[in-house]
Image 1 (cartoon, rainbow over the protein chains, first blue to last red):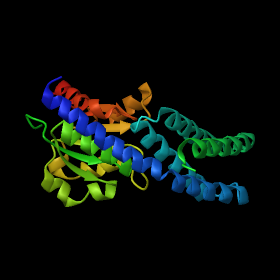
Image 2: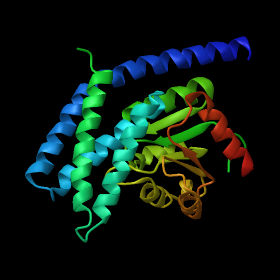
Image 3: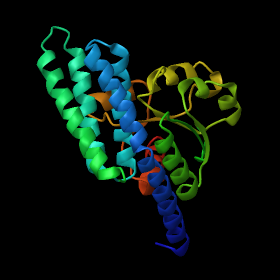
Length: 120
Length: 129
């Protein structure tokens, strides 16, 4: 790698690190938003807007985390995002047990994210 | 199609991903970008004035997704033949085939490696030259 390429790589790495710090700093807000959507879903399991918003939060979290090299965070968020897709496709009621299990796993995920990324 | 790849119209709703890609493409790739945060913003006539050599579109965006954005961008005669690349986490063979059926020259998987993004784009561009 030439000196110029080294400089560019360092500049890029520094910029991504700074953006990653900002991303991690916003995680508490993301968790709070997901908590609100979960509460709405608990009140009404068919709240389409809440499911859509929760899906959007997970999708965004998955995409950004992966881009910043936070692979486990990205993978776990992506997995939950896909499960929402699958549940919402199941219109025959067969998705109900999956919804209960999802809610449990979503809570576990949020506890894990909080422990890993939110400064006490 | 332009002889050289310089200007990219980039559409991505996620502010973090957009920031990383913008830095990667400008610093590492040396490209000139017009970045838009939604399909609606991309459809502004400023995109035509920008005269991109390539369009780089996120697939999953709220309100107007990437394929819909592409279809509407194609309504501009100036953008009708501009090569397009989609960026998405959905890169199973059938999904890639679908994006190519829409006219994409390729698909870049998300999450992407910022250091390699410019190279990936140049590679896809060169394959259709």
